[in-house]
Image (cartoon, rainbow, N blue to C red; front, side, top):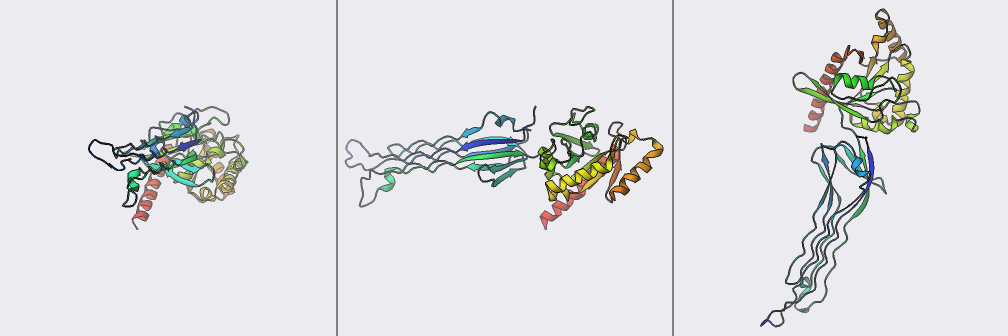
Length: 343
């Protein structure tokens, strides 16, 4: 299925039903008085996060959503039926903003989480509501109020614990296929990954985490070059970034890392400050007796002081050690987050 991560929709809540003007007309009951009932409330529109949906592609052709209108009131003090609420399912991780103002009104990050995006109109009042000691036969009523109408922008941000970051052909797709059940398209040319991929990495003891592979970033991505800028936003929710570097003979590791760092800083200071590990990939392409010297040269040039892992996504060498270390770190971060919430 093609990945669609943004959509614009129009939502319109139902109008409230009008109040009725009526008078009691029964045999042997003169001057029966007013009996016009109230209208029903209009239905509201909600967005609800559902785990079974992975894209916003359903909103490409279906862009208008209207809730049911409240029924008008009737005689004999009959109240009109309220309109049914309209619940629109969206993927978990959907950010909702108002199209006109850019105001963020919700972020659906949990399965079943629901957000009111358009409130239904209030019911109109029947003439029985206006009866008084001085006005025993009121002929006035109130119409229902209109339901809210909004143009909304939906933006899907992947929910992953770990994000893979790197230039095109750094081996991100190969790594996620090696350590998870994800099967992204892999080929020997840049921009193999056109849409984000999610993979669940499962370890012993029922431990697991979600890894996201996004299209590669190139120089100028923060200004819109290439594909990576369209998906860098998906890394905003990740707890940890794995920065993959092509260590093959044709790669330029130092320049590649510097380019990525510059693009991150320009795109988002928060993302640039996220914990990031360096993963030196394609080590199988370097002769065994040259590997240590090659790695030291790169790390010295970068003045890198953070965690470093040497792997080969193709042969899966070093990947077990990497994912186990990632799992341990994620558990530490989760415990710290839970502790902060209880304080």
